[in-house]
Length: 282
Image (cartoon, rainbow, N blue to C red):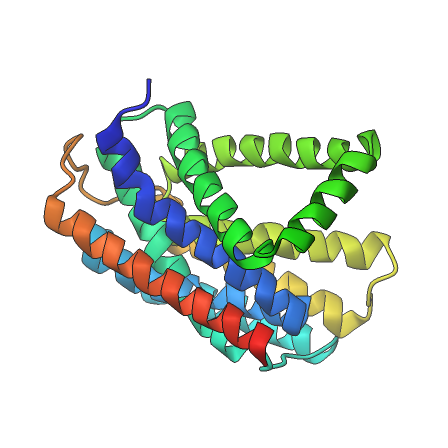
């Protein structure tokens, strides 16, 4: 059963998640995947500081910082021997690097305080994010009658080959969301960010070894260096990545904290809208 108070409390987290998805897609669109990998490898560093301040999570040990630096160094080396890091989407990169650590810490706080099950967390986050996504799509991407008619015609005339991938994508997204919430419940925000980068690095490694990607020695070793850094972080951080923060009492969200979260989300939405409109006008 949906509860209005919990729905409202999930607004900022879902909004920031939507903003980071938009910013990440924009970086890939205007730069390349290598730039996104480097950017994503940076996120655990500010996240570690933020969750120490906001959630009381122990600050990583020196050896753990070495692991995070190895993770970033490997990503930079990988990018340098492939397509390189391009700064053509620097504004979107800054937005991503600001919002993603805040979103990670906020979601962890909500998991600890709302008392919801994994499926409850999935329902609230995806429901709010979907409503926000539909609103932004209709107002920014499908703003004219002609564009909406064209999109509907393509969707309705494509049959199963068009609708099927959309439905499959939604089902897979919900599945990933469920397992994501299950993992977030037991690990720290920084450990979860490192895990997310590791998944992308493993995909790169498989692509290098089994497909037609750059399988040169330096390229492969750079990915292994990053993976080694991620493993090193997990093995040296207190609790082996499991959350060590003091457990907050359920339903302990404060109105002041919710207001700050909403202000951060609104700033992010205005920022993303400004960048989107600037690109369309430019």
